Amino acid sequence: MIRMSRLDMEFHLFWDRNDPVHAELGALQLIFGTSTTFIFISFISFQCRSSIFLKNTC
Image (cartoon, rainbow, N blue to C red):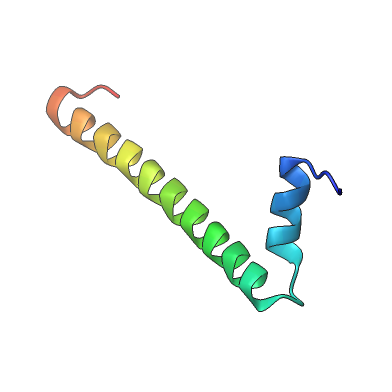
């Protein structure tokens, strides 16, 4: 039985282009990860701007 660490599994999910299902999962994982980060960053910057607008402090 082959044991793989979680990092190895994620690496194979992301880079295994021979298997279309794994490649698609990797692409979805990448898109979801970056969009979540983008939403989080824009939310933080929005909070920052509104607090500057309301209180002049960030």
